[in-house]
Picture (cartoon, one colour):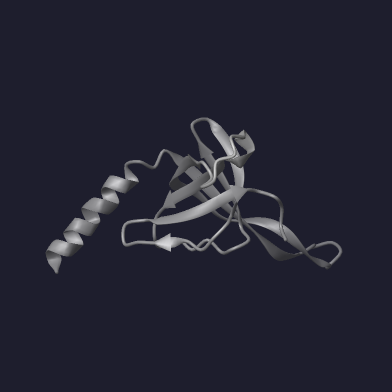
Length: 126
């Protein structure tokens, strides 16, 4: 059993070496205005400076029509497995000198060494 844990630690360390960016997680939370005492939904940063890696891949459709609009781009975020990113959050990723906002497009695939979250470009809160 100890050998399995050591292998998992090595695997996690190897994946974490690929983390070349950071992300910040934002959620809509009820915030009370101190002056008016009115509570409204506001975007709030809930986690910041999270080491991560953003991966892009393009896949042509099964029945190729020959147009560029048919190409499907997959955007995947790799980060530590213990983090919980609630669905509907805005994820701002800074990598390679660029910052972009994304939304979670599916449930995270969580492994002992990391998690993978499929992303889509941010379109706003639902």
